[in-house]
Structure formats: C-alpha cells, structure tokens
Length: 115
Image 1 (cartoon, rainbow, N blue to C red):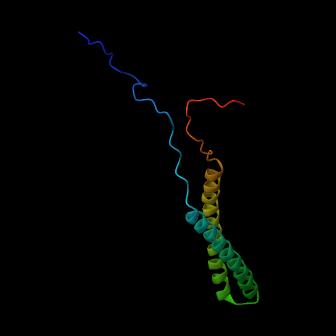
Image 2: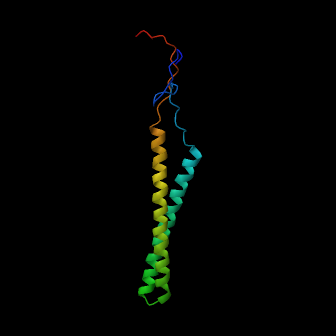
C-alpha cells in the first residue's frame, strides 16, 4: 500500500531553485597578466622578425652561419605569434565574460511599485 504522500520520480523531482548562481567573475589581475603576456609576446615577435631580416641580409652577403640563425629567428617568431594568439583568445573570452555578466537586481519584496 502507498502512503498519502506521493514519491517524487523523474527529471523534475529535485527542489526548485529560486535563483541561479552568478558565474564567478574573472579577476582583474589575471586579465592584466594576460594583457602583459600578449604585449611581451608581440614585442618579442617583432624583435625576432627584425633579427630574421638582418640575418637574411647577412646570409645573402655570404655568411653561411647567418642562415641557421635566420631559421632559428623565424621559428622563434612563429612561436611568439602563436603564444600571442592563444593569450589573445583567452583575453577576449575574459572580456566577453565580464561584458555578458548580468547586473544584480535587488531581491523582490513581493510588493509592486506604482508607476
């Protein structure tokens, strides 16, 4: 026999939530560190491109060792640009998360405000 209470079954058996918790806000320090990392990566990329051009000129003038340095500088520039792009996508995601965050509303008192 069953008692007077009905057993809760199925997908909607849990307690109802009145409010969804807000997502955790990313810290400004982490955002600042991402911005500094992007800046450092782009500056290093620019310097390595400058060195690659310089080594290319030296290689064309007959310095055989400059071709190896040209290859290393090119690989380093590619790596720096890749890191800058990864950090840039994380930075953009953090900025988007801050912008999409809804404003907090005060809790409802149950009374209507006359307009």
